Image 1 (cartoon, rainbow, N blue to C red):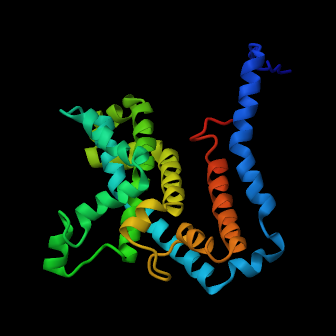
Image 2 (cartoon, helix red, strand yellow; image 1 turned 45 degrees about the vertical axis):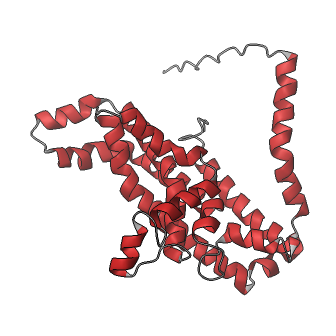
Image 3 (cartoon, one colour; image 1 turned 30 degrees about the vertical axis):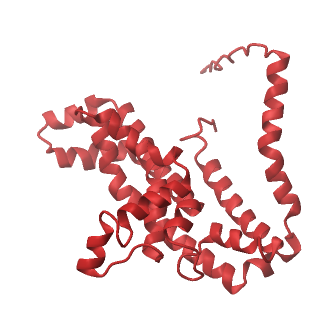
Length: 271
């Protein structure tokens, strides 16, 4: 006969009344706009509004560019996260600060910085145009670049945290057994951080999908070329409030689904 001991429930400290009131006010402040959006949604016309040529093209472009941006964030952000987490070097805190800047930088300013770097007369863009005829601004490639710029920090900070939490003894044991650094990275480190890597990639994708300011500043708002779903919402507000709300509901649903799927990995939820 086996006995099981239930895990004791931690006693919860009583919350002051003012804390509860302010918490409810905060929840209402965050939740009421979302409820208002759902109540205003033209549910009976959703299929019609979301299957117009403009909406479908914006959805297609958003999916393509956000997936490419997330892939670019993984390819470039994973080595950067490893460098910050595993190597001591002068200016590491400055490097981490540079990685986090897109999180707090106004999106329009982010678009301006991209123009100064990759514009036709930009720091790097002038050579891309003069030598190879590549013009990134106001192109689909420019959309991918703008989305990756704002999305990569989510990937980096998520993976960096995972790398710091790994018990180094696993990697040390592999090295003492003769494994090369590249093999240790692929066979030991990568599987340990895989859940966080997936979480970071999903967050980066969701952020790229919802990007607006840097995109419209750097790539413009041209249907079929650079008009993603957020830009389509902006354009639809001028001609059709119902279409703008319908597209907004799609973006809200995607964002909510991503956050719910990551609640245990990124938001600290249980179950």
